Amino acid sequence: MTRVVLLVTLAVLAAGCSWSNGRGVPAAERSATLELRQVQTAFGYPEGSIGVLRVRDTDGRPVGPVLLASREARQLGPGTFESDFPPLDLPPGDYVVELWQHPCSGVCASDEEIVEANDPPGDQLDRCTARVTLAAGETRRITATWAPGKGCAAFE
Image (cartoon, rainbow, N blue to C red):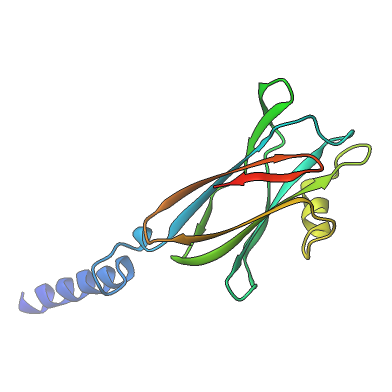
């Protein structure tokens, strides 16, 4: 009986190691989430554009994949549209967030073709950058406000 209790105790302790970082913090709380939306404040490129998002560490190394804004933009008013990027889970730390527009010519390319054309980045129209610090467990929401040919008005 003592042997069974010992084995169960060891199994529970081993499971706990995968759950925490050794300081009692659940694994889900060790990461931070970055959520970004873009707001276009004027009519844009004749054949449209797709927002491209890249996050880098402070040494300039890419962190995570190149992300594209949703193709389902919502109209907020005349000439004003918003779209979201997929949320990005990152370790806590300091980052540089870069956003730019990939112009469409004729028909916008597939997501895969746009990612390939922007990794490394190609033409970066209306480029916006911001430095952000993410804390463990934090969800940071950032809005980039931009106008075609004028770049960012705000990135906060």
